[in-house]
Image 1 (tube, one colour):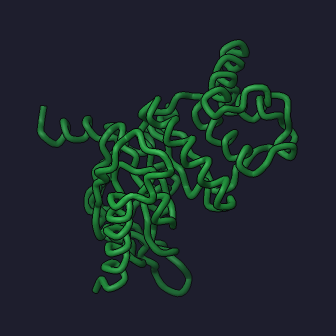
Image 2 (cartoon, helix red, strand yellow):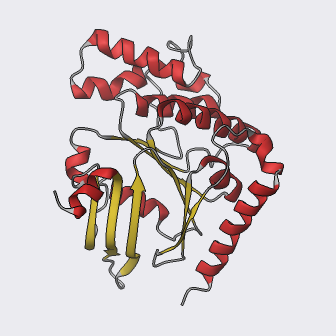
Length: 266
């Protein structure tokens, strides 16, 4: 077995010299440029950078929702398309994107229905996923009967119903108020510690990236480049109180300095 194939199998995502250029009527727009990235299995990775820097675009390339125009990318050892077909990843959007006419349980079961999973197994998985996000007893509620934070937890539960190896999250808590956001950050970190799925998380928030991640990927303004990958040395069993510690403040400072360096990238 070659070193390259061994590396691809050890990593959940591996991108090499990745480029993406959007063709427009006026002129081409380069969204990503020479992106090189390895995401280890079980890592919690956050993409952070200014608006328009390509964070979501890179997430969409991993999800096979956008096609790169240069370089290569491997997801779970195969192409993004090959990873998408067996639903090897779950995707959580900034908006919960729940169907208002379906109950919470109905929303969770929908991807399983599409996959052809039998009714008994659909019910079991929906119940198990709701338990993961502490929403037991809300199966028969409709999305409009839930708070914004609860709706987003349903969205996360839906992504977990088919037990994906990789969870892609595009600013899932960005539209929530600070108190609810803190609660969901803490709850989701506990959930990740239990299942240790590979998570790729897009955020604009330095404290959020520092608190949640095992590694923070700092991106430059367009065209999106990776300026720095910062490993977190915070303890795994952390609570929100850690944000007052020198270690957390130092990590946040390193992220902030990386963002400043990105803005001065020439």
